[in-house]
Image (cartoon, rainbow, N blue to C red; front, side):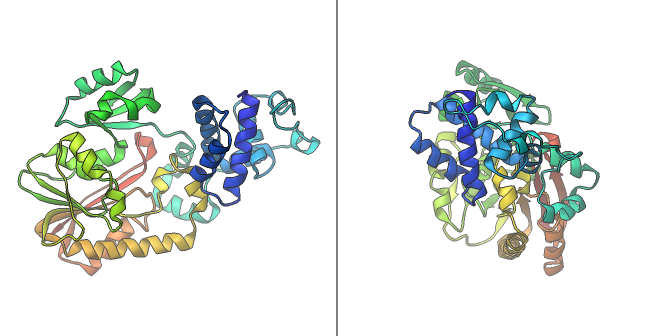
Length: 382
């Protein structure tokens, strides 16, 4: 496909997303109906679509309208190209610019690519970093790997990855974290991944897991396990523990037994947790505001009502996990959100309900530190 044809395809996909379809669904529908497109074309169109969603409002201002066509005109202008060279109407290229589109004068400054209703809460949570973090959310997120130190050293993992053409760089504050510099789309097919030497995991949750106090013999529960990434990370860090995983939707953990076997880090699957645990990790459902670089359409689908529902759900999960923490044990509350209502505000309310818990650690990561936005609060039960 030519660059112009890729732009035309992205316009069609974006129009579906703007009409309310999830981004992944719209991309899959286009891919299935466009068998002529190669893997390079599919990757390029995906990048165009996700890049446009990250900068939706600013590109719409540059392109003259919140439509797939407007976003792609904005993208071309933002990237320093001349729209007339792409929008030619020849072959599979999009139609030439109308006089109105050609005469667009964008505002100065451009919009900050945040939902209007959320801007006050964003600024309240991030203070003088609000603008910088909003800008960082318009960039593509790096791919991070976690070295499974029960199987390999970081140096060994780097060597095996290099043999498959994957270049990585280390993180100074996380020895087992590797940022993929090139070859990110080959990771899932690489020997290092298939043999359990590395797992895909963002830097921020790796740093959060590294802050948890672990020791041999602990009974640890990953309460909202999902795919089980944190359970695997904790089991690899301290093999002499009993690590269990639970999720209200067990299907989310379907791949966990195979992943644990590949990594050589046993994790017990619990349908219904019973008894008390020395450490309960609750990475709760949240707004995902910290992961907007990866799921940019979620930025525009989030509503105030849905946020309220999530805050209520988080409170219920905290109440449930409180009963599972042994005296002297820890509750680690995590979100991939940057909003105070889901983070510090949620913990303040929890401690008012459960005064036997004390906050012993709290940290917020943002994309300015290299990973996704992420929150951790550690509470100790008296």
